[in-house]
Image 1 (cartoon, rainbow, N blue to C red):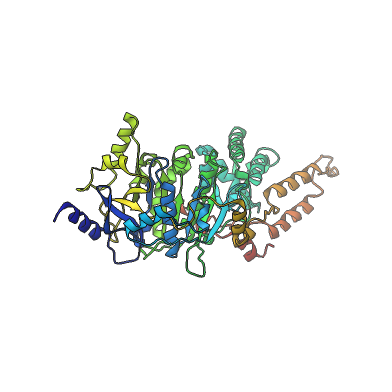
Image 2 (image 1 turned 90 degrees about the horizontal axis):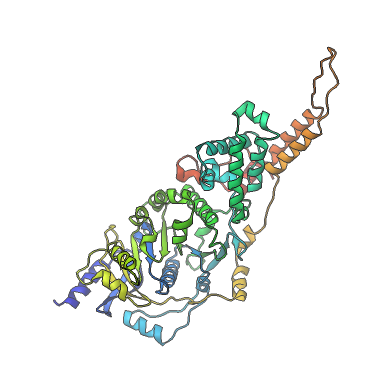
Amino acid sequence: MGKREDFISAINKGYTFKGDSIVLGGAMLDEQCQPDTLIKIPLKTLNRHGLIAGATGTGKTKTLQILAENLSEKGIPVLLMDIKGDLSGLAKPGTNNKHIEKRHGQIGIPYNAKGFPLEFLTLSDEKGARLRATVSEFGPVLFSKILELNETQSGIVSLIFKYCDDNSLPLLDLKDFRKAVQYSTNEGKEEIQSTYGRISTASTGAILRKVIELEQQGADKFFGEKSFEVEDLLKKERTGEGVISVLRLTDIQDKPKLFSTFMLCLLAEIYSTFPEQGDADKPKLIIFIDEAHLIFQEASKALLNQIESIIKLIRSKGVGIYFCTQTPRDIPDEVLGQLGLKVQHALRAFTAKDRKAIKLAAENYPISGFYETNKLITQLGIGEALVSALDEKGRPTPLAATLLRAPMSRMDVLTKKEIDEVLSYSSLTEKYNEELDRESAYEILCGKIEHKKNEEPEVKSRSGRGREKSKVRAVLDNSVTRQIGRTVAREISRGLLGVLGIGGKKKSTRKSYKKKGWF
């Protein structure tokens, strides 16, 4: 057989699977798409994570769109981190034209324009269902990591959490936590010191500065109620299509702490909440992180320290994480080595540093007898990519230069009117956009301080020794006791710490309130 026949045989052998799969495109040799060489990705190994890389303008986002569409068709829910704001078009059908017809004719598959079920989510002021979590749900360890505290400061945070648990003071938002820290070295200093030990004002000052820094990046909108339930990411339409949840992040590109806080919260909660799935026929959820270099280059140390272990562990829950970035070197080696699917778009060599990066990128792919990988990476056109996946037994498939299929949905953003139309059908917007500010640590501690200010001295005893005793102490004690009926006790589950190995399964704050009959 000649080179062409050998190539077709190798591709068909490497990309034929027993289980269900999705089609990315057709294999290319010598810049020509070869007949009957469909590049397929088995659903069974999609929870092994992946990478979509390439220079600006080479088609990375469209590849992400193609993957999301095909996953949705197979009944797999998808979460997209939309940093650039150009993924909303998934909700509307695409438009066929002669270029698309030519491309699909070369690949050998029909083009079917269609829209997909979409939910818009937000961490900020963008339109969509608001994602929130309470401070209590984070727990002291994870919360300390987010604030990047040292060992001493982390110990104080644990002490504050313990005090609030013991005294039925719910930590729902940053205002609650800040008030509890201030109380620990002011009005409540003697009370806390007698039971839990001394707290340094210098350390609490440092903690408060970290909290303020987090607030300035918009985290005050993230911490609070209602807590987002990750099960809502697993929605499917009646037709069986998986819902694509688009998290709109266009206004937080310069707020890495907020983004990393969200990522830690989301991944930790998914890990602690979802049951073990093992090697199922298809994943339960796929998460795409566009512009992933923003996470690894600018995010907090907490995320960088935890992402490797999360990548290793979370696949057993049936969850795959896919990073979309410009070059593989944006991803730490420890994470890159865990990624099963790699889709490499063109890279450009303008400098010696660029040429070195291309050489390193080529080494991330299986050796091929049909391509000079380091040269081919610079010659790929728009909508073309090198693909290597894992077969059903977890073995790398042959490297294939691939002519990618066109997205079925619109390759452009929705108008404001169309976004409002999508939101009008959203059940999550109605569920999560009611902002709650229940009585919690802030209000209870403020009331306690006010009572102390109004204390009156007791009449001198018969012995003539002046001793002051609060005339309202009994009333105060009863008042605090009554708060227990409306606040969270120490048994609040901190399931978000499951990924750190020190917590149990998280319960929704609102659900736990109802179960205990607290409202």
